[in-house]
Length: 489
Image (cartoon, rainbow, N blue to C red; front, side, top):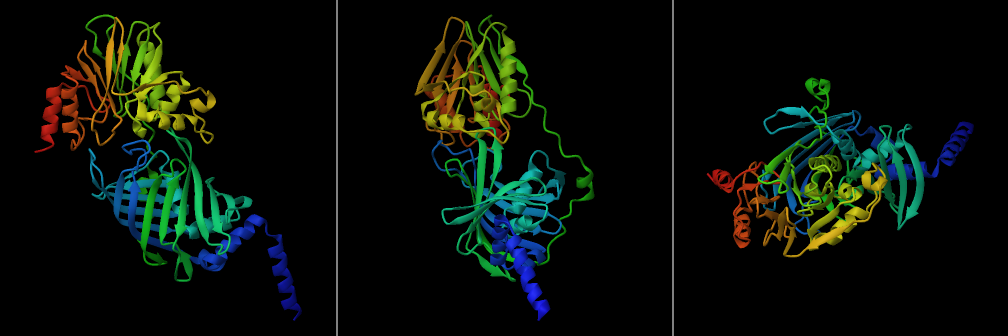
């Protein structure tokens, strides 16, 4: 009897010693099936289907995102070994210039991330792949609660908010997340984490769990819905058809060759200038290429330089801006034309503003650009966060002519383009140099906007000698037409 009484007292003392954060995690563990049960789980397999919206590629800035339909989804989690594999089949539900039917196989083993092609060949993934896939692994109620129960995890800031109980978690690997519980059932409602974006600065991602079912003594959700804190964009919506706990799985260990290989180094960021028009002094046009498949163009006017496009990222666009400023000593770079709002074309918008450039764009982009420039970047402060400046913007309706004695650049709104209805293109009539982004790229496997491209050239009476594009390489119109025709054979 004395021993029973001592055990009761000891149990009460342990419970009393728990912090508010630990109490919340304990309540979540109990709701999911009990601490002992969820800590005994070795593997989870999640199967289903859903959608992967194409973030940053919506036709209109305030319109819906184009959709990748996920026809097959399978996420395998190996909890004791901290391994994960995502296999999915995606089919584009929108016109696209590259592959529209894609199979993905993405894996993680500890801090090693790798991808496997449909032909079975694997290669180690670089960049933030390992960090992103750690979040994919933690983006599950059982896994996140187990991580919070780890004595090495740091719990803080227990609080209540709109019928939910929240607690912040820093994992032993340094990942920071916020877990939200239903205040009544104590089941995990969502998990949130912050990422950084060249376009949006700080981005809060939240996956909401719903439709719980009991599988082998633990509760698992039937739906995973992930949203960004920008326009409430959905980045993934997976409906689960089957949850399996501790069933047989493939070996998720990284192959020896992958584990011993160094993670791919980031491609060097640089910009090279090719003079595409030098027929007379003061009438020059440069095509800035360099790393990757994103380009920019510089026009020289009497007393200043104008840049067309600040693409891809802060680093890429800063290299372009720096290079542009070396082209004509004494002439400042004062403005940048941004063809449309898609993320690969506006990755340098924030740095362009920080560099004091006036942004020229189609009128319909104004609100979106103001939102983007106003966002905070605290996780990885960019140049605009370190050097805040207001957005200076000049808007284009149907056309805008930039002209002086040295140069003329006619900006036109591209009519009836389904990919980007607010798209701008540029025409330098004196040199017969044309500039476009996303109407044509020699590397595309199909050309869904070829007819619209030709119709807009005809509408504006443009017959160019060279197209200096934002994607691809400098070509004549005859070369472009031949490339388009070749993809139809």
